[in-house]
Image (cartoon, rainbow over all chains, first blue to last red; front, side):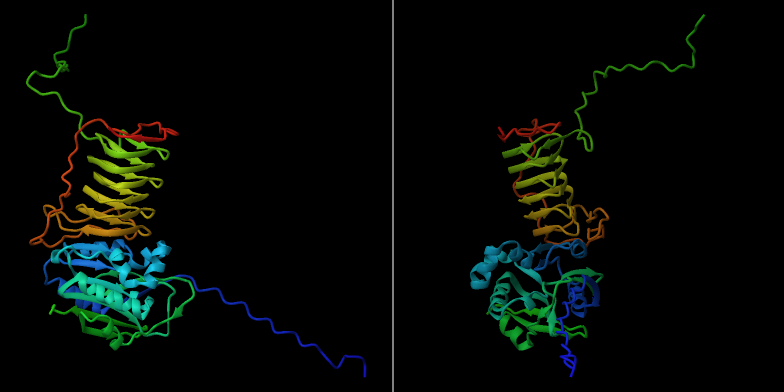
Length: 220
Length: 195
């Protein structure tokens, strides 16, 4: 037997380097909820729109046709820019919400439309309930709420920036960072978090999103 | 030998006729402008009769209704701004009132409300506040054709809409600019207070 020749040290398998995250990509999808919302706005008085997303010039242009008022809250951006605020929101969302979304002084300042986009996908249950309750105070009866809730298992690391193209198309950029697990809120959970709203229309789309167009209930 | 030709035009008098009032200098744009340099800090009201570029700090009010106001990339403003065309490339915490147009460039950050016939938000800008979109006299928004910017589109006539006039009722005094520095840029002057 010649030494240890019969024994060959097997090479230790090296862990494969993690693939770098894919770069940002732009996607377009038809939005039936947006189309339904726009159809109603065209028959209404100039609306007050509250956009919880970040400022997008194309969206400003789009809503200018309705000659109303557009309020941009940049909800996620505000938390990202202020770590102290983000920590406070994580600990006590109800207490922080008036800073993020100031309450109207009277009903004339209430909003007719709220664009939540995909924000709910990035909130805990407690946060979503706090936001849902707060949105009830920001809107007048009959107001519309548009939300895009993920049904896919994974979502981008951060909320998408949605750009309205025409009345029924959304273009958005998905950041190249690693995806995260989606909460996949069920309709019942959404309903519990938004007690002031009812689901008027809901569309389950193939690309992992369920669109909701909700209506603000009348106050008791 | 030399005779004045009958075809030559009669020399005109350059002195103003007694009946015509002297002309006031009209608003100039793209010509002279004042610059608040990056080392200048002003607390108070800034008014004037020329365009203004702010690269420093201003806290108070900027009222240049007939002129253009540019907040440069280094500008840090905590004030309401009144101007004809307002362009924000730096930071503003305050309300913007543009008689013609307001542009928030990609590098701009604005926390406050915007009131103008035309509003343009360029890609990359940060904005938090309200944009009053009700048309003034039927004019609609149009802005520079940068990506993400708004463009003109006819709007519906509003009913029961609130006015787009600034609520503070500020008016330009027409006085010479106070607390601002003229070109060349002043540096190292420290903070200045307006009268």
